Length: 272
Image (cartoon, rainbow, N blue to C red; front, top):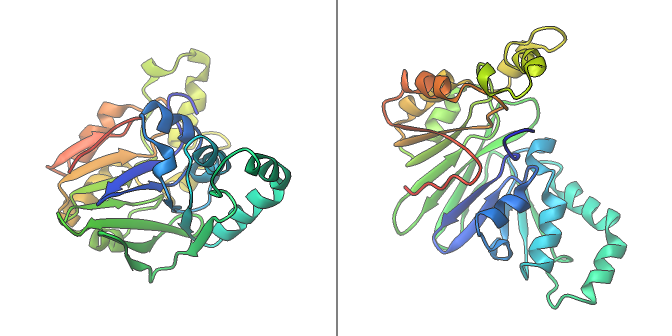
């Protein structure tokens, strides 16, 4: 999509670097941010829509060949194992060829872990918990908590507003919240002839069904209310469609939430 890559978040927790989702342009975003992607050996998928997993094959290869990654464990809902199996099926000959060139075996030993609503895992210096949210397919929010500092980070995944997400995010330092529906800023659309197209996405005009978006995503007011009710410190609005009115989004969130509100952009870095 114009302006932005797909959904992907790197979380530094304890002494580990974790990747959540792997949407379009993820590998290039890691490069631009100067993040050594070979250090990422743990991944979490919120769900398996294309805008959240399209770069997985690219990441699996590049973090191995260019980054020297030695292992990878991928957590996610149903379909995660099939995604990894597809990598091996489609690229079997390519993998065999590259294994003669690169010194580590970081591509052939990718492990998968099925995420359910009972996921609560203690890692080395941090915990991860998951809760199901309500989207068009099976989707999970994740909470990461660092043992030493007690700092906590929550990513909502794609979801409509639900009470269980408020409980799950309670007291988090940072909540990164789905905020897909928002008005178009016509001044930001480069071609005036395209303005109606992007307004369709915002309002559901013509053949586009507004209820599909609003039933499966939050808007900025929803996000602010979730952050307020959960008592988080910082709210980050993400999953932003192209040419949105970003200031309007921020104001709508701030009308419900008096903490810090940020609108995510590619390369944004946040410290709790």
